[in-house]
Image (cartoon, rainbow, N blue to C red):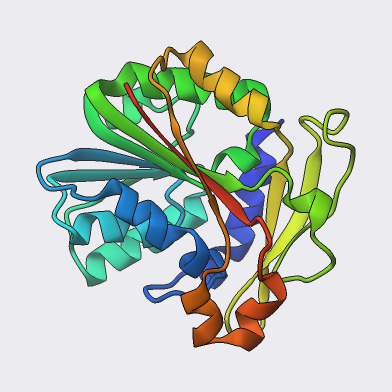
Length: 251
């Protein structure tokens, strides 16, 4: 998979992703949980892979992280992140970089590495390469936290544009196939997203091949009761749908 294709998706839509308050569906259904998993971050050196325009990266910095570095393959996204950093200086180092080859950009010895909805843009081989590099650059006892669209979602969900991927193959025969999709903004607009299909076996085998030997934690994320009470019109059509998975593993 040519990384330039994913880069173009985000370069073309970087301004539509820019936000400091929740706008995307996953800003309610995934990122708050991921942040909770990361905390506390005081005294931690953190690398946020595929940081985009820095929405999640800034949350890590605001919670008192010792050092935060964010990289993304999209120059457009990094430009937006740097503009935000100038407006609200948090000491974050943003730069253009690739999740499969980031050592020269970031250094090493991280206490925490995050990758929020990154591996849905990578092939299985690319994901494995990235995870091996992550394992190499974590300190002993350091954590790796990442998220993906729930692998079964494209096989269960309907046409609702709030969170939808168009299948291009079966559960096994579609491995490494591109499932193009959309995710909703609260204002009714959508942004283009992509899911390169992987099974749970692919994900966990990649972690093992990378050198992670401790048992990982897995959470399946969806619309919560609180969100349904907050806005039934927006969240209701996705009630009881498997939307995302979050995984946390220690080196």
